[in-house]
Picture (cartoon, each protein chain N blue to C red):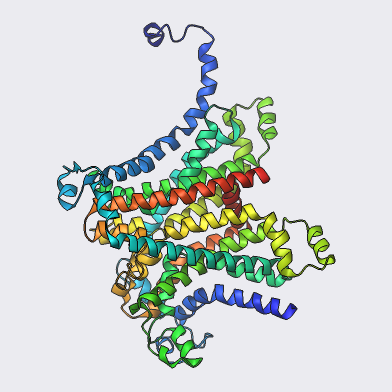
Length: 271
Length: 314
């Protein structure tokens, strides 16, 4: 029984890790090892050539910068807007609060895939097609409901007494928020914004539809999805590019560790 | 002063401004969220409905003089046998994915509960790594894993004695591509479901299990009489979420196969996008995506019912 359990555990571990392991391994393998008929499963010789090829690919840095700008801009905007709403929901009593929360929950479940066509048409009508601005706005809206919900959760976890005590001591509501709540909220803000960043960083469908003519304005996911055009059958370089694309996401996950899991699970369950 | 002079009736009491300022604050705070939702979510949705009721092709996109045609687009779509083929395929695709995800995630969660500390952390680490893998990175890697000549999957199958897989081109065959997409989606979905179920399972009081074991109940009986009934709402919740996520999965399919080969992997979101982008029938594409939204709303209503039940039980 014990052996079966442990074997099962190792099997689950190998199946979940293998594709990522294979990606990183291929990225570091010399081309002759990649093309050998018998694959090697452990790094024998290591090369950085593929990373060189990926980074030297035409437009790599502008795609990287575009992704960063779009995701960063969307998250900053979402954080600002969501913080205001989350404060109103978590701290103030007002008529229509329940309706507002319900609206945010529904917005969180939006099937964005069904809105590709109208957003394309709207972008075209307003001359926003092929602009990173449009993409930023869409990503902002995709991450906004999630940001409101999680920030509300983090805010609600901070005792109101702290704020009231500060107000008794002569702080205004704004001061109490800035000096007492904000420092306590900072980890929550970080976790929420990083998760929003990942969502925007990975987004493909809208980037694929909204950036058409000006290929320099593409983002990393769209560029990577057409790796055949860039690298042909150079799988080493393709895997190196994938690894570089995944790197920031992985770093964020490492940085957040447990908080991401509990935050998302909590967000999904408690809404 | 001028405001007061112009509208004296509205602010009769001198104390009113002070009392009115406080209740205004929450509405002021939610205004940006409301505006964003109105312009970036509600408006596109309404626009989609409008397009689906118009004749809207490339000429209308360029000139912008679309005419309303009532429900003609819906009639056209619903009378098209191809659409029903896509719907059947979407339902089949969803069913097979969700069943696999739920069964495997439950197994993984049950395993996690029973593991020792170090192995549990190892498995959870692996799951989080899978979870962290971006969709596009995963689709790229899967194309490499299943590559015909150098792919590691073909090598493993040949080594195990399945000679017919030598240089087998997975992506040329409809069913094989379908299978790979299911594998990819299940692989990516298990971490969330398994970790959520695990988090729920450890909240079940240990005494219940001990009592059952003393009474001589087997593992299956313990699961079916204690774990599952206690976590019924949680199971329902995650199943609903997975249904919604699988139905609308677009990126994996679009990047790997664009719905092909033939129509073998065309599900509703892919079909709507194909009709709109490739055939430039934005009207039909909008109608198809509205029908998909209806399908999702049904799943969503089930989800909210589960959410409500969960909140009440918690």
